[in-house]
Image (tube, rainbow, N blue to C red):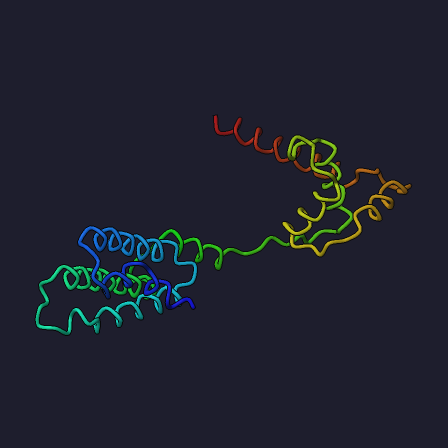
Length: 205
């Protein structure tokens, strides 16, 4: 279970026995590394919080802290681990409240705030682009098959996967307009923009 990920480490096993100091030191370092890894990745903040909280409770009420001799090696490592876990819980709380920003949190915010692309033109126009890109060989050095490329670009533009070849057949059957009508319109619009920009630059000189 997710909340047991920290209490099932060798550190918890050794602090309950009669391990030597070197063994406890090594297992303590491993436990701290596990906590750091858990808090750094934090793919699921809730599971991280539950695991830390459970570990804190188990450390707080561990037998080594309930005896009068709290200065032995085991109790020292238990108190050190407890202190670190509490600091990490505080850190997690700050992240969840927005006081601390981590790369993972920022990426989740960006993903949440970003608007997906949506192709709002005609599907057959998108097929022109797909076939044009494929013929130019500018994706994966032209080694990606059309049947793989088309679904990827459909998904990228938020279009439900369609029968690409059927649209291509319609393109080949065109009589009143060019086979590459949309691509030619793109070329014309781009050239017109370049012309306007060049004229504007000349006026600023």
